Length: 356
Image (cartoon, rainbow, N blue to C red; front, side, top):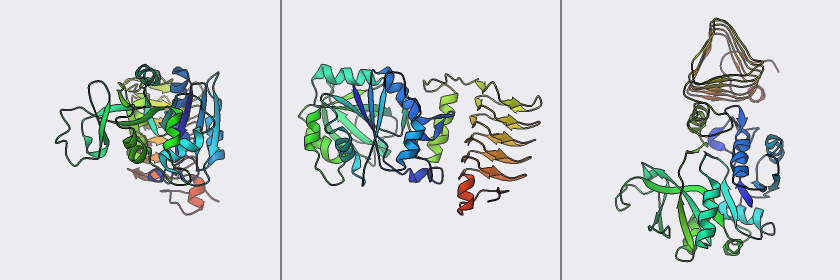
């Protein structure tokens, strides 16, 4: 089985974190997000993954690292944005000869991709859309389907739930199985949306829906990125990290002072230091090599690698980019702060700044 993963976006809602790192390699629970996605694909029997990329491809290649055993990962680079359908055609044409998975590359989840493929092949479908349940349909594209799974119509971000039946409502989860013939429906040389232009053509012609159980979250905003990190370390989504609501995950070579306080769920990465009197957690991830100085507070936040939080500083509901510095007595809340390199380029970091 081959999977095409769409990772072409610039992640503008996550800036400045994505100014020099593509969204798929940002850390979730201290692990590049793309690595967690590759784990799921390997579990479903996927042997080749094609990443359709249009932004920082070399950073993406580096962030992939070593894929799961038996899996090959290829990065193909779009010269210009092609939309969801255009990117799928660009990546898949000439590379697939049977049904293949196509995924949005910014969704954290644990639903079984193998079950999605099985539903598709059992039905003999032309295309299969994975669905996830929501309690509020107004922010999503609702997929209306009958009891047999046949897609009847799409309702994009309805103002109310009137006429959609009882909750929960089932929305497009950004995971599909497609036959190669679908690629022939996608025009060349322009932006094409699979949701708005291609799937409506397939209604009544072999397009089915598959209701998928499991966790689902788009990681494309700072708020959702923080929530995804919290959910991973708390074990609310199944990943290689395990995790639980009571988890205090500390790397073997991390140094935590006896008088520091760690509040579960919390993860302290390799080589990190938590000094005397500091309070870290809950729902906090501290990246490798980071240092939290005396009496500092870091709560419901994510620190990337090599971050420094000065003495008596506080970081609350925030993300601090790689090698960022929060100065002594500084306070950061509800923010996303860039890397040390961004500070030199004019992206502000609060408190002290590293020279350079």
